[in-house]
Amino acid sequence: MKMALIAALAVSFIAGCTSISMTQAPQDSVDHQYMAAVEHAAKRYGTQVVWVNLPQKRATVTQ
Image (cartoon, rainbow, N blue to C red):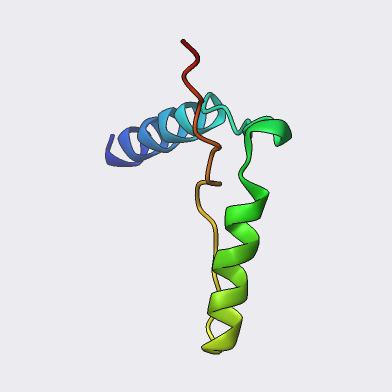
């Protein structure tokens, strides 16, 4: 009984993880200039940047 419960939980966990979408932001909305500036500053200090969420360009408001 205990083994069946563990197996059922494992299957539901794996099924839940496969339904998560791993899409990335469109490349035209990524702020590459900001990324380059941050990575350059990090390189000067001998550190490394790992981007979890890519920075997005801010939308401009037109009136």
